[in-house]
Image (cartoon, rainbow, N blue to C red; front, top):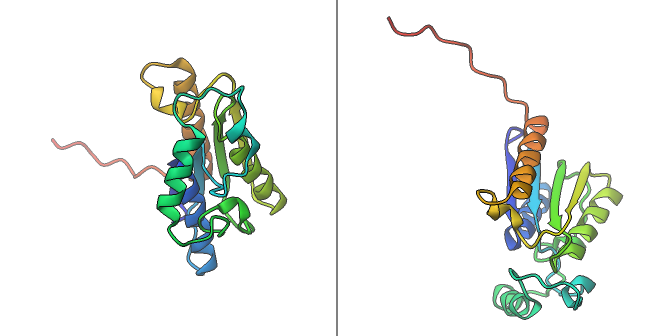
Length: 173
């Protein structure tokens, strides 16, 4: 597991964080690192940026997030640490890289998770990307900024999970 980097975007970013908490709590080995892209980490919908009229994110709106949270949670309280990892004890988690755009409604979720991780002693790096929307990484083929962000993710993963190359084999004659 130490050579694995877990990653997720949006709700998947929250799920990736919850996976780490759950693995730790059950005493399982943790992956070497995690990359969380525009993570949705608070299903109570209490982050102020969700309601900021200055944020016009075309990818995600609070109304859609509210419906998705209700459908996902069913009878689970929205502040349950595995549903909303921003409320979990993050002590002992592997290094985290968190990317978020400054023009998306989940910016406060990302900042809050990064702050909680830092306070828990986790090696965490939060990168806020100027003028970027929710999961802007998906624009990689069309956006130099998205490609730059993807390169930063690759660099982080390579630093966290050092993989030794296989020994060279002789070429067939």
